[in-house]
Image 1 (cartoon, helix red, strand yellow):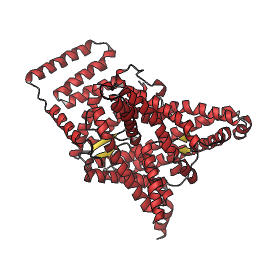
Image 2: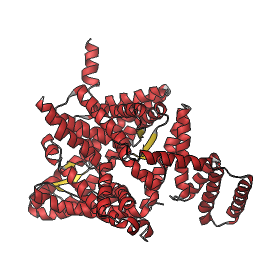
Image 3: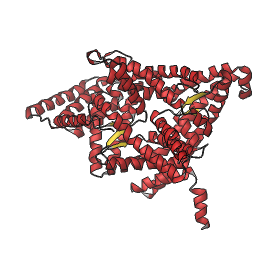
Image 4: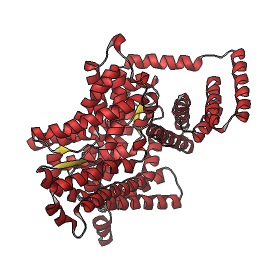
Length: 429
Length: 134
């Protein structure tokens, strides 16, 4: 009995062990050899540890940034980073085990819904499911759910989103690709549909509708070639300007012997290092789990429609991606200055979200409302995807998150569902 | 709730079926085979920078013939030489998905994983081309 208690209390409570066991389950179900099962499980555990290390680096950098921003601008400046939220939730807040189990539950609910309803979508973007599991767990916890209820409710809501979002996007995807064989699996779909709605109202109509694809635009976004470099391009000036506004006297108290502007520069780089390490951990973490479970899903739902990551649409409308990226960035910058006027936190623009979500939204806007739709819809989309995460800041702060908010708007929508509906209902009964 | 577009769904499926069942006459097939032979000769003599384009064209001819395996082979070679997201890319993704669905129906996990991984690689190609990575 003592041994069992020891295992339950000291080993199974460790998030890294739970995650490794989930990977082990997947590998055993795939009938892998003993060696592959052991190495795959250990790699998954390693991935969790690397993710934790990345999270610590990000938290260190964001703590510094939070202080200089508050001093320099007398308000809170929030960095939108789902990676930072995931890292902090899994480690600093100790929700790693629950997130891992919710992640598994989302897969299972996705399979059940696809198997037994006419919506045959299997969500194949593993990283996005991890972000969804993070948000449903964090906000489920905030709403008062614990233990198995937290995991099952999170798994169900995440599973419904994993089917509903591709289903909502599919009428647009069909028109964009001219085919019904492949779906879009990216948790920014609420934003895409929002842009399509704006494009419908304000965009070109009938014969006046002209596609952005008829325009001659630069074919490539070369400045975005490297993910980490593009994050650095935003973070370095942001940190240095903020440190300058905070002033030499205050900033130097945090910088020790280093010059305060140099320290700000190094802290910006530290943030990028943190994202780099964290995402390397995520890749290791998901490297074994995702192939195992998506293989199982595809066999259990043989007529499934695979929901793929957003680049699946880029080849169909490359100009709209560029227009979407630029207009979404403009919308994000407008929202950054407007939202504090209404008492919300200042959400700083995130280059990667603007590129991937903005680019895809641009395709939706162009499809529905032509050039005008893509431009007006894109700016509105940028504002929208900044507004939604801003609504979560108070809750994140109260839970002890450091200076960050979520990005992918479907995960934000799920979070708001907990905050505005499930939480109050639980409190009422 | 998500019933909208259902009618169109049926229409699209019908269109796709019509496309699939578009029967080529023996003359059509001969013509396509001939164009493949000519392209192969052109490939031998062409400068290296034209290789990807010619391989894509040969792959597309095999798509037209309905020879999925050869089409995949040539389209993959083309993308390996030069990443692009034209018709070759779109057809390659479609063929991978077809192979994936066949493997899922046959309960063949090994082949299923191969094609899921190939689809992942195509997502990366799309990202790289859009961002200008060569």
